[in-house]
Amino acid sequence: MGRDVRVLAPSLLLFLAFVGSAGAQPRTWRVQRGEALSVIAARFSVTVEQLREWNTLEGDRIVPGQELVVGEPDPALSHTVARGETLSHIAAARNTTVERLLELNEGLDADHLREGQVLRVEALEDRHHIEYTVRRGDNLARIAERHRVEVSDIRRWNPRLRGNQLRAGSMIHIYSEIPESVSESVGRPHHGRLIHAEQLPEHHAGYYLRDPSRAYGTLETILWIQEGVEAVLDRFPDSPQVRIHDISNREGGRMRDHRSHQTGRDVDFSFYQRRCPSGICPSRRIRPEDLDVERQWALFEAWLRSDRVEYILLDYALQQPLYEEARRQGVSRADLARWFQYPRARHDRQGIIRHYPRHRDHVHVRFVCPDTDESCR
Ligand SMILES: [Zn+2]
Image (cartoon, rainbow, N blue to C red; front, side):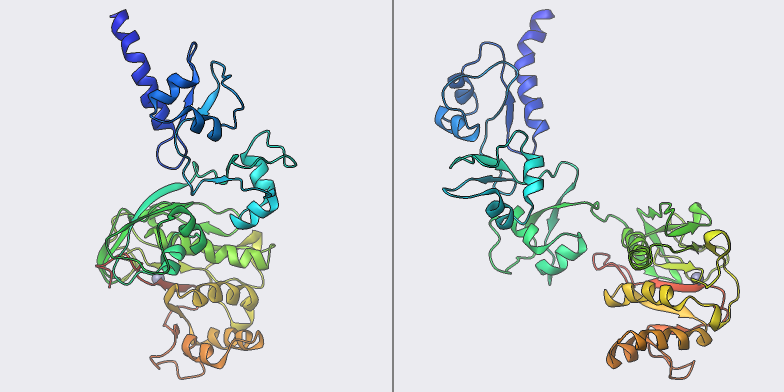
């Protein structure tokens, strides 16, 4: 038994070394007692010269416990210093900062970079590694936006991508702070359901959640709600919370008190109001002059500008002050006409912001179908 364990140990260690460095990171190996560089080189099918280069070793001296890079570093995550390059050159070329490079490369002497030295340029362990399959009609800007990264990031992680040519069905690597969306909105808001829903988390600065068991949506809905209130907080750090009433049930489908809200895209919010006792804006019937138009408009504008919303339903009387605010802020005529039903009549079927009866005490927002949810209507 004891003997078996000893026999197993090295391969187990090898396995662990690979698991610990799977995918994004260069392969590393912790030097064992008695191991020479040549032994390690042979084990990983590389040359001693490569080991020296990757680890900026001068001679053959290594010590047990030392961590060595034993595989070609991933070009997306490393940078090989060229002659004459400085940290600020590298930072600019790799779309990062000198501070970040110093953080990632412990013990790095910024004044003595050597040609051939390999630097880490990113730490992506904390991000979600997504193997994204390109869909018909995708482009890099859209994929980047969907995963909250930059087009330049995607290019860096996928050095083989050329130009804007994307082949449907091919796979690209993305390291995102948000998980891959597995939620799915199925059918119509009045007759549909929700798969792998995401629950809206608490947000102490932005909103108050009335009932978490009725606060399930698509991942996109959840992110967009947070994005919206954060846009308000960016502009107005001292803002009261709005109340979020209902989104959908965990599995979607029929929901008490609502006809829609079945597919994780409908959300009811209280209005930002001039006076919100104890920092939470209540769901109560308000007059146009009670509306905090600056904050309310900041919220709507964040969604409208990024095409997140299909409808914003509220009482006709509340549209005018919002319209005036938008105009005062220089929103173009074309956008005003596209976004507002007002000053057209209350039953005119144009505009994203529309009249809806009994919506004087809350606003009903319907987010668009996530573009990956193919059965969403
Ligand atoms: Zn509603």
